[in-house]
Image (cartoon, rainbow, N blue to C red):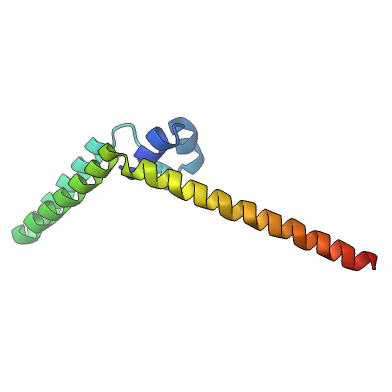
Length: 114
């Protein structure tokens, strides 16, 4: 669900990202993420219920809570905001890294000249 959300809503480039990540995490990107997750959860619950109904009920309750939390965060823009914050931090990190690398290259060049 989250891979699909990032690909389509945050990065806004679903087809490209799905193609680039296929067959690895690209298989988790789908146009019907909610249906896929719910269907898989129901299949897992059914499988568990064959052996232990209590475990199946516990799984279903737990997955319901987790999915509700994720859906709330999606609707509230939490992941989009978090992505933007992290993007800024990583850009700052790489810019600092590039600046230091250029400074060190200049220092080495100055040393070689002497």
